[in-house]
Image (cartoon, rainbow, N blue to C red):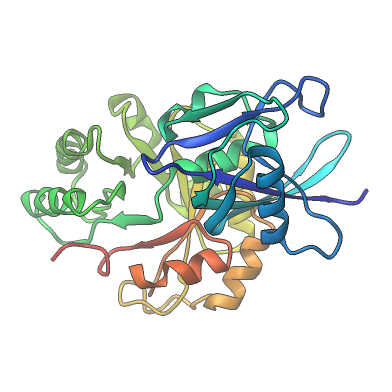
Length: 313
């Protein structure tokens, strides 16, 4: 069965809201909401197809677009490759040219809409930012909280509280304070045993590669409404992350790092290869800085993650 290549767009308005369209009842996956787009014709460039489809469906022309995520999905009756681009500027006024209902929704509301199964990773990618901050080791509680406050002011919207050398009780106390700081501003990801999940309902959870290997056979440990991430370094770990149903991963190390000098860097070419068959948003970590974000997009990543290069000194 030939995989159907589809170009789709996450279209953002100036207020950050995202445009959705409803599929006609008589079409495949009819009645569900979708990110607008359509089939890429043979020998047509993806961006050309996207511009054509958005003009035909919505009466708009994209003027700023970048790759967001690629998703391969097998339905019982067809196989699709969704080539998703983020459109941040366009000309024209979007309207349902074919009479289809449209809705502008905030990223947070996307979970309230029903999409085809293949769209779940796109919903995650549309909600996630391009930078993922990981807290540095060796800081006191007050230093961590001060740095988090500064990072939030600078616009960080996703951060991981990582303090491997800290005692459990101290980590848990700081997690409570960090959650208070992040409320309404950013998503906080915690690390630790899954027994703690019930104590921090507002937090997402970031699993170590070891936790991923130990727990993936049991599937996702909590419902979809809560963010689940994992640290990955190999193709096998990417497969386990898929099996577990995580929302996003970090893939590392891209380049040599001070934190883990013994780890063999993957290099950009291998990163691109690993992400080729992976359907979830991925942050590249290890020897990358915020300046590498466009290169990360080009190899299929959501963005970049980091400790030193991202932490406000």
